Structure formats: C-alpha cells, structure tokens
Length: 133
Image (cartoon, rainbow, N blue to C red):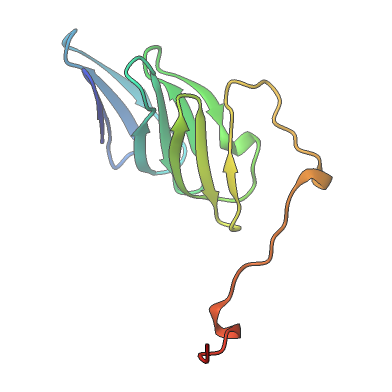
C-alpha cells in the first residue's frame, strides 16, 4: 500500500492494483497478469505522479495519473529485483539479485551500456583482516 497526497494505491493477493483518489471519490483497477506485488513506492516531490511497483523478479514504473506503465524492467534486465528506492523524481536506484546497484534515468530513451564502461569491484570480506591492530 502506498499513500501520496490524495492518492492511495493498494495491491491485493491476486496482483491487482487499485488506485483510490480521495479528492475525486473515484477508483481505478488494473488487473495484473504477471507476478505477485511486493511493494509500492511513490516517487519524491509533490507533483510527481510516478510510482514504482516491485514484483518478485522485476519492477515497473507507473504514471499514477494515467495508470500506464512507462518503464518495465523485464525488457531490460535478466536478474531479479531485491529492492528499489527513489533518488530524484525520475531516477530510481535498484538493487538486483546479482549484487549490482544501478541508478536508472527512466526519461532517457536508450539505456544500453557498453560492457567496457561497467565497473567491477571486488567485494570486501572482513575475515581477511587480522584482529591485531
């Protein structure tokens, strides 16, 4: 369940999304035929209608004003989504199952990244340190 201003967005066990507008006294239903919904996170700032909907293995960015999907991670990434949060009004930061953290700009039309520009860093393991300092 997510609340922002006069909008309340809820998900049920059948993966349906319902948006209640308390100012207009109206509701809209979207029947989702894919995965079960884990979390709903509204974008920051007052006039931002973007909503992130996290599923078991993917996420979608919705425009809550028109109830349309504007970004679907299943088209771009193969690994599942662990967590998602917002950095700015159009930039979510996403943690994937393979350990990568990516900041996405959903307003850009292309998101292909050449392999040579990816930065791979070894993970820090604390058991290599001795307890003598």
